[in-house]
Length: 305
Image (cartoon, helix red, strand yellow):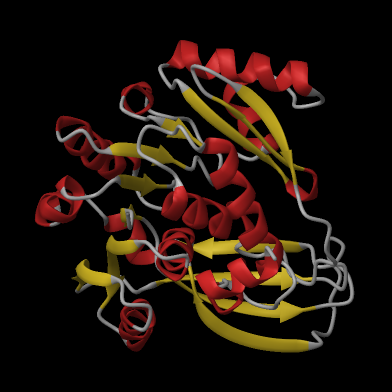
C-alpha cells in the first residue's frame, strides 16, 4: 500500500558556496564554486518521501516573488500536492546559505522569511490533506504553533505524527503530547533531554526521557554511524552504510522522508524502514546539493541489490 504523507514545513532557496575549509573568525576566503537549488527542511523531506514512492502533499508559505514560484514548481516536478502552499504578500521566500568544505561537511545560515508566517490558517486550509494522511511530518523551520495545530488535527483523525526537532529549540510541551515519533540527531537529542549520546545506554536513557515528555517512539540519527530506535516493544541500533560523503546537506531530511514512505502506521516494520532510509541517505551524501541529491525509489532499490 502506498503511504500518504503530508509535510508541514519550510521552503528555502539554497545557495551553496564551496570552500576548501571553513573560515576562521575575521577571515576572508575565496569560494571554489557557487550554486543555487530548491531546499528547506520541509521541502527536502517532502521530496524524499515523494521520490521514495509516497503520495505527498505540502503545507507551507512562500513570498510573492520568483523564488517562491521556483519552489512551488520544484515540488510540482515531483508530483507533490502544493495546494496547501500559501503566498505571503509582504515577506519574501525563505533562503539558506550553505558553506561546504572539501570533506563534505557544511555550515548553514537560514533566513526564515515567509516560513515564519505559517499559521493555523494554513493548517485549517489543508485540513483534508492532514485527515487523509498516514503520516504528518513537521520541523522547526516553521512556527511550533502551526505544527501543534496540524498534529492535534492529525491525532483527532488517527493519523500518525512525526516531529523532527531541527533546528534544536525549546519545545512546546503540548506539541510533544501529540507527537507519535520524534527524530532528532544526537546533538538535538542531547539539547532536549540533557543526556549526551555516547553509547547504547545513553540512547536508552534518552528514549525514557522522551517517554516521560509524552513521546513513546524515538529515532536518534548519529551521522555516519547509523541510527538508534526505540518503540514500546523494541529498541536497536541500525548501522549506516559506509560511503564517501561529498555533501551531507539534506542527509537527515532524506532519511526522514524516505522513512515515512515505507513505515507502517503501527510502526511494526521500524527496523526494515530504517535500513531503507539509511540507504536513501547514503546516496544523498554522495551528491552535491540538497534537493537535487535526493534519490528516487528506483535508485534506492538498485543500491540495495
